[in-house]
Structures are given as C-alpha cells and as structure tokens.
Image (cartoon, rainbow, N blue to C red):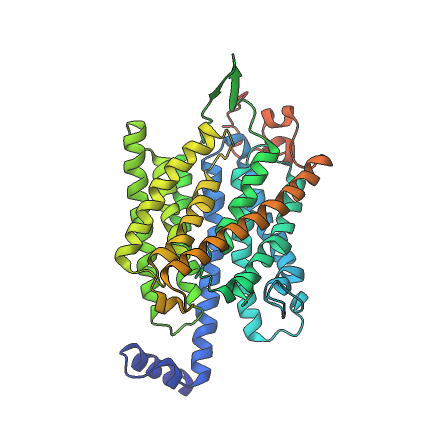
Length: 435
C-alpha cells in the first residue's frame, strides 16, 4: 500500500473520531474526498433516471412502455449535451446582475473541480426534465418531447437555478433551498402542469354526458414495476440530498440522510392512511407517491430542519399529495397519469415553505426573522412558478402550433410503442385497448 494512501486512511480515521476538523487535514486529502463523494453522489442521482422510468412505465399502459423508456433515456442524453453547451454557463457562469450567467459555455476554461461540479449538477438538470415526461405520458409526440427536454435543461432550469444556487437575486434575499424542492422539483412540475394543460387529456379520460363530466381511471399495467421505481428513487435521493453537502468530509452527511429517511417514511405512512380513509382501502400507488412526496418535501430543508420536524414535514407532504392528486384529476380535470405535478410541484412548494416555518435560522444564515424567512420562501416559490409557467406556455404553445406536441387519435389508441417506435415492449404478450 502506498505511503499516500496510508496517510489518507490515518487522517480519515482521526477525523472520523472527531480529533481534528476538515480544515486541519491536508488540502489534497480534502479535495480527494470531495471529488469521490460528489462523483459517487452524482452517479446515485443519475440512477434515479431508472427510477423515474420504472415509476412512469408501471403507472401507464403496456402499449406505451417502450416510449416511456425512450423518453427517460433521451431526456438525459439530450439534456446532458444541452447543459454542457448552454445550461451550465447560464446557471453557474459569471452573474449579470444576479439574473443570468454569462460565461463557461461548453465548460470553457474548466478545471477538475468544474468537471466534478458539472457532473453533479447535470443529473439534477435531467431530473427536472424527466418530471415532465410522466405528466404528459401516453399522448406526446416523441420529437416534441426531445425539443422541450432541450429547452428545460438549457434555459428554464438553469436561469431560475442561477437565481438561487449561484448567488443570484433570490439567494441575496435569503431564499434557502438546500437540495432542490423548488430549484429542481417544482421547476419540472410547473413545466409538467403547463404541458398537461396545453396537450389535453388522454382519450377517454374525461367523458362529458348531459353536462356532467365523468372521470375514468386509466389503470397502469405494472404496480410492482412502479414500486421498484420508487425504491430506486429513494435510494438515489441519498445522493440527491446528502450529496448536496458538496463536501466528502462534512459530518452533516449523516444528518441529512437521517432527515431524508424520516420524511420519506412519514410521507408513505401518511399517504397510506389518507387513501385508506378516502377510498376505504390503503391504495398502493398513493402510498408510493407518498414516499416520494416525503422526499420532495424535505429536500429544501433537509439540513436546517430537525429530525423530529422532518417527520412532520413528511407527514404533511403525504397528506397533501393524496388531496392534490384528487383535486387535479377530479376537480380541475387535468390529466397527470403519474401524479407528477402533485408530488414535485405542490409538495415541492410545501417543502420550500417549511424551511421558513421550521428551519433553524442560524443554520440558514440569512439574518432574517422567522416571518421574514417565510416571506422570502413564499416569494421564491411564486417567482419560480411564474418564470416556468410563462416560458413553458410559450414553448408548448409553439410545439402545438407546429404539430409537434400531440400524436393523432389513431396513434394514441394503437399505442406509442408501435406508432412512434415500431416496437413492442412485451412481444407475444401485448394487450391492447381502445382506451
């Protein structure tokens, strides 16, 4: 074993038992642990793409499974190139008045630390893009999906991200979002909301008879696959939240992992009991979404909220997601097949506000009073909502106008696997329906 490795192991052991601080350790060792931690955490977040793919596939119909897989593969692939070329520069380039980055396009002038940070951030950008996929599933043209994935990762997500995570104007106000309840999840969800509105519902979802609208449930084809996706997402969330400490020797990694675990568990339990009371039986899909809701809810405040309060934040998130799914579907008649808007948007907003309500003001470090912090969190939620909704309406409006948003009725009934890709996900076992 090399001398440097022995030194590293000894220093890490001493640090682990609390004898020295990270600042007292050799800078090279600190940098090495940061590099390893952020690369591993980024890989864990990347694995969440598989989780999103499984959740969306399981909660939609068999005839669209390959289309879902292709969208989750390609929103990362085209998104990574778009974030490399434009998105990173807009988000982390030199700030112009706190509103937008102005350099580092194509990672110009990057060193090893920038490559590390770009890798960790590109997987977050892809998460924002892939959230849109679920809300617009089963009726979106594949070509249109590729185009809006590029815009989300190159423009929509980076601009609002700059305001918060690169010392922009919202950060200067004291807005706090540790790992992205608003920066990532709400951005994807608000774009998904607009997309679902502009594209319209799936055929047969809302049937109007005699002035009354009947809401028909369109069942997903594989609940175990959806459950596997949720477990993958939960696993990846430890990279998402704990990785956002941005330091491999940060003792708060375990703290963040703890609050993340407690909130997710509470969210799953709360959604299960809420659905049990609401529907008469504990609903599997609602319970799974409850776990995701707990994760989204704690993401903004995972470092500044105590473990016991993290349970409360997750519990409220779990209740909210059930109510929101029902209202969006049965009252607003917006067709979101996987509940993406509720999980990532409504609960993302709740989690961001929870920072102001319950966060440790000393840790937040904004210098604001409790009321002031709540107000700033509310401003951040509202401004990001407005930014995403306006740009998304323009984007989806253009795609609709040029015929690149929605497939025609025949293709939708046939299924996007065959009509868009010429493929069958379950060859020899495919079950088609006229819904």
